Length: 258
Image (cartoon, rainbow, N blue to C red; front, side, top):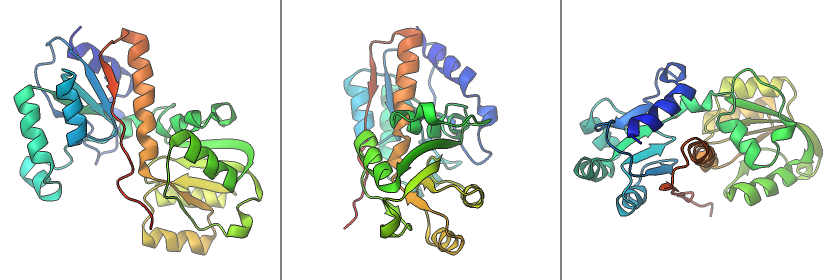
C-alpha cells in the first residue's frame, strides 16, 4: 500500500475545501506519495517525542490534528516555534511526510466536538446537527457530574469555570461542546439560546469579561480534548486498511494549575 492510498482516503472524507481560510491543513512536509507506506503515527501535535516514535517504529507518515507548519516560510516558523527546526531537519533526513486535518476535520458531521461527546459516551444524546463544529447535547446531569465525566473519560485536568460553586450541582440538560477554542460569537449564541453549560477551551481574558457580563455558563477545559481526533482516525484506518503499524502517541497537558 502506498502513502497516497491512505492520504487520498482521508482527503475524500475531509477535503481541504472545507477548512478555514487561515488554516494550513494538508501537508507540512511532503515526500514521494507513491512510496510504500511503512507505518503511521497519529498525534494531536508533532513534537520531538512524536518524531522519535515515528523513527523508532519505521513510520513514514505522521498524521496530526494541528498543522506542524503554520507560517508561510520555515524562517518565520522558526521565529515563533524554534523547536521545529530540528524536527524539520530530521523529517527530511528520514523522509517522513507530515499531514494535518484540522478545521476540515472539525467541520465534518462527526468531527472533533462529536468525538468528544462519543468519548464521554454521550453520542446517543447528541441533537442532530448540520455541521460538525459544535455539538449539542440533551442530557440530564449537573456541571460537577460533567467535570467528573470529562476527568474520567478524557483524562484531563486544569479546568476553569465562571459558574458559581453553589450552582455546580444544579440539574442541567442543555449542553454545548465547542472543541478547541470556540468562537466567541458561537458561544454568545448558545448562551442566548439558553444552554446551561458551554464547554470549550483556551478562553482569553477579554472573552471571559464578555461571558461574565452576559452570564454565559462556561466550562473551560484543556485543548487536549481534541486528542479524540487520533482515536477516531485510528479506528477508521484500522477498519479500512487493517494497518498493522498504526500508533497513537499521546500528549500530556503541558501546564498545570497551581
